[in-house]
Length: 571
Image 1 (tube, rainbow, N blue to C red):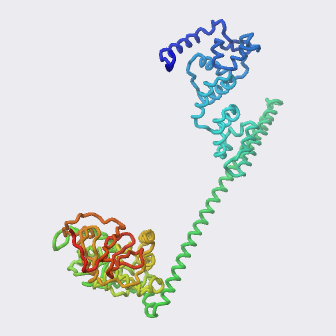
Image 2 (cartoon, rainbow, N blue to C red):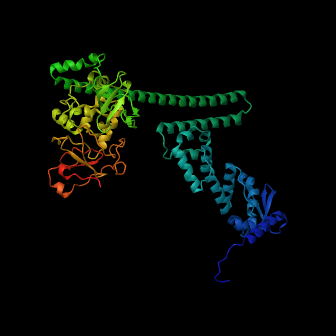
Image 3 (cartoon, rainbow, N blue to C red):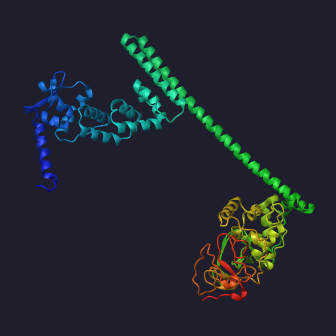
């Protein structure tokens, strides 16, 4: 009916397929059958109208003034056509064509191209496109089916990207002259010497092949001729293998030479860095008084066997990370004490274990004697004879906090002058404090750190925003006058000289209970001070501003400084 869309009927399609297959069985008795003849012998027959339905070439043959229209016979002369004719006849009658390998697909595709059978051509081309191509397959496609543009483009892409494998394959030596010239004219991804060597191999093989043909034609049974042929062939193969082996040896020698040169360059860079470091140390020593120069030179030898006696008041450093499981007075779990934490001995028991008050929020903990040592001896051991003399008075445990010690160190060192740097305060040598130093401060600590740790801290400082923490020019407020407000819990509290804090957000290992939520602080959270507080002479700018704030670090702004009269309580 008009206006209705036609749909294929599955039952009708099945009936037509069965009908055509029945016709295949009766094709020899058909009155209008066309015969496919080879050397006067009928190879197969087919209904003329069915063959013409699938092939435009056969249709023209049988409907024009050509000889096939009168004789109703089609002569087959190509061997490939003869081999695949039964499969093509079955395809005409609706049977599925089973492709049996690469060669069979090439034969079917050539026959489908010659007789203009588009459905069969598409089927064979799709099958070939899904196969993994080798050099032999590539040359077959170039020589036998150059009409398939898709397969041809894929083949040329393979040969151009892997010419080395192509030249070493037997298919390259057996390819036709036209194919070899076409390959050599392409833009091959290899050195010119490889292209030249491949051309020579192909030429030698073809010359040898021509000699073999001449010998076979003139004296096939002549023993001398066969010996000549075998000797020439073996000679060519031997020369080819010698060239391959020679090329491999040259490549191996080149790689070895590059490795040796790379190692020499690396050693030269290391030696240059060591020489520069020695010059820097010598120049730094030359600026010291003569008495200090002598002490510095002999520091390593004199200190190896003379550790300062560990008594109350001596500053020590943790040498092995451990868990401080209980605090002796309360019996409560405390914290993990990391390596290189610095503290001051409060008391020592008869076994050598000491109660140490650490810098910052760690507080006091009992440490076994094997887990700590004298700070001065530890640094001398790490720095060897190149370390700076540790003659600073460790006053940070006697009233100066970290920022005050840092400001004092910069003032004594001339604000960034590496050659005239003063000895480093012990507060700045604690492991947790290295992350907050500027690059020039880390450089002065280089001798006190393992190389991996030094590079890690330097990378952290370099990635901080702003890039480098500014050296303090103004003396920070006294610890007794500094008030900081926690930006998370809004608690204002006066920080002690040692950096103690009762805020549980900053001191999670503390047993003090707060009504504030126990969560970590958000990084880079700097809040603007109230207008009333802005009008007072209180420093609020962070390290990215024009002034330096005692409560600012490169990565986190967890505190803001408030005036003592404007303290804000939680709540």
